[in-house]
Image (cartoon, rainbow, N blue to C red):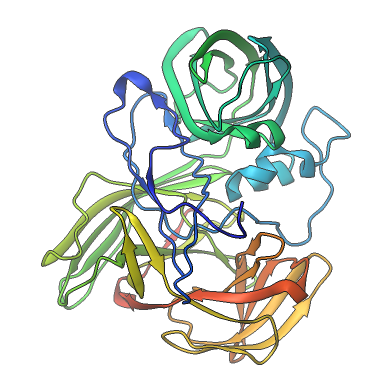
Length: 449
C-alpha cells in the first residue's frame, strides 16, 4: 500500500444487516489533499447490524481513528483469561474507540473458539455485549488449498437463546487483514436483549463457498445503561434549531437522536458538508474529542436548498467514561475538487513537526511547544477555540496517523494530547484547507448522570 493512500469511493462494505431486508446502504468516505495529492481511504467503518431493523448509513465525521492509543496505558487482562494483554486484543487494534477502551479496561470476554471446514479455520477470540451492541472479534486461518480472494464476504445466522435473529452479511473486508490482524462482527442489540444470553453463530459461507463454521458461547451483558429523552434544544434569532431528543448510553457507545433545521442564507459548494462537533467533558477540565462513527437519517441532505432539515441517529464510541457532552452543528467547506460521483480531493496544509511552525489555515494555528512524554505526545497551540479541530500528526514513512485525543485550556494556549509519536523526525503536522461556519448559538450541553 502506498504511504497514506486511501480509496475515495462510495461503498457498501463491512456491513452486517439482515440480508433479506437490505434495501439501501450508503457509506461515503471523504478525504483531501494542498498539493492536489490524491489520498485513498481504507476506512474500517465497524458498522453495526440490527437484529431487529436496518439502518441507513450517512456521511461519517472525522475519519482518522485507526491509530488511537490512550494515555497512561496499563497492563490489563481479559476477563476469564489471565496472562493475555489487551495489546493482543483484536478489539484494541481494529475497533472503534469505545471497544478499544473496553479491551484496555478488561471488559471483554475471551472466547478462544475455533471451527474448521473447507480448508479454512475461523477463530472467535473475544466478545463484548451491552444494551446497544454485541461485538465478536474473529480472524481467519487458511489451513488448506482454498483460494482466498482479496475481499471477503461472510454470511452467517445468529441465534440468541435458541431463537433465530436472522441472516447477516459482512462484505468488503480485506482478506489478508482478516488473516493477519482479524476483524469484528457487530450486531445491534437493545435494552430488552437478555442479560446472560447463549449465543450461537453459524457461518454458512465465506467467499460464496458453503460450509459449516458454528460456535456456541455465553456472554454477560454489561449492566450500565442510561436512557434519557428531551435532553436539550436551542433556537437562534434566525430560526435555526438544534435538539437532542433522546440519548442511550452504555460503557462503549453513546447513541443520540438529533434534529437540525438551518436556514441556508448563502450558496454552498459540493465540497461543503454539514457536521456535528461532539466533545465529552472531564471533571478536571479535560475535553475529550468523541467523534461519531456513524450517522443515519431518512431526511434529505441538501445544502443547496433554502433550508436544511434533518433528523439523525448519531453513534459515538466512548473514548472516556464522561457523562457530560457538548454538541454544536457546523458546516465545513473544503478547498479541493470532486472526483467521480462520490469522491473528493481536499487540499492539504502541512508544516514540519517543529515548535514555532504556523499552519496557514482559515485561522492561523501556531505550534507553541511540543512535549514528548513516555506514553503520549502533548502539543501546545495558539489558535482560535471556536471549533476543536486540531492538526493531525502524520508519519508518511511509517504509514501512521495520530489524531488528537483530548485538550485543556492553559492560559492563552490549548494543551492537546495525542498518542505517543513514535518517530518525530519523519512526522509532520497536517490540516485540510477549509473554512467553518459554526452555529455557536445552537450549542447544547447534555448531562447523562
